[in-house]
Length: 141
Image (cartoon, rainbow, N blue to C red):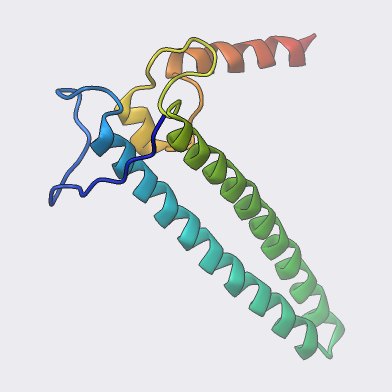
């Protein structure tokens, strides 16, 4: 599928009253994903600077313990952001390929409301619920 970049009308928001994953919707979600990725990248850069600075300033053992707890938290945050960035890249690749917005399990469209809330979604709400139910069953066994 050709990856068209189109100019969005001012104040555009996807609507159920238009063709699903038309050029405007794809461009809208592409921009949303890129903006999210840029925010996560900026936050990660801040975390890296924080980690570098905090490691230099501890002298007292209580301060060191507090700093180490803070660093562990910041590292978890950084890892979470790294995983999200990877999922954002996968979503951008699906937009380019033309499969974005469609459930990977059923092939049916994922609701616009779900994509607005979770633009990296790969499953429809129904498929996600089945998947989570199956995980609970397997966990209980």
